[in-house]
Length: 355
Image 1 (cartoon, rainbow, N blue to C red):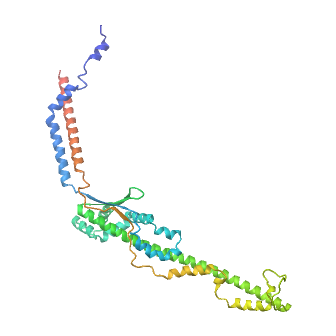
Image 2: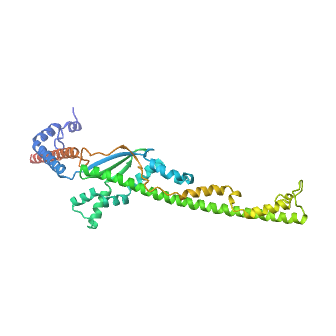
Image 3: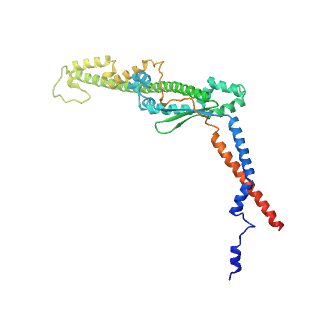
């Protein structure tokens, strides 16, 4: 004997759900609708990807400069190594040069300066109908292009440089132009930093020299005063010749005798070379002579080394055609399926209510 509860459980809920058979039948009956939506979305995607602006990306991979890349820089600054401190030494290290290049490459001010004189960008402006005198329109256009140049550090040793443009050739041209432009900028800035650093170092050494000379001159004056005092004592005591085993102060050497002390005073007063008093003054003077050497004007070097040079891109970066078309077809199928199922539910609902 079955209970009412069991009867309700065994009933097929046709009023609330569409079973698998009805689901497949509904899809088959609405196949034209599904195919139509797929075609509509697919055609719309094809129309978009064929008419949308294509963007091409050129890339180059670089690393720290080699010894040969830095040959001219090394030769140019080697004449100043004797006066370099730790900060000046770090300016010309390979890792610091690569870091300087990366920072300069990504600097927006550097990009703006480049775009102002780039011939390739001038042609792009002309094609876009934008002039440098257009004010806000030009600034907005330029701001968009600042983000199309980038350098990303992939590891401690490798950096990927990239530019995005509206044609394959212009993307390569802009990248190569900007790579060279940035390298020149690094050369200029490093020269300025080195010259400034050397100037600061020269001032530091001059101050040290002045201090040491002042101390040496003071020591010489004290030595003269002590000798004169000893001479006065020996004259009064009538000690003309050196006397052995004569008790005397360590500073006032009366044991030398008046004749020796008189000669000593004469020599000390005529002494002009303070290096005799302090030998470090001679070392400082030699270092300061280094600054009289002229900094090389044609000092040009590469602040990076290529791992892989840029080439014309094979395919566009954006829009991603296959992805857009595939996604549109999937979206068209989904919308068509929803339309068919909703329509089937509506028909079943009307049929149920009419009974």
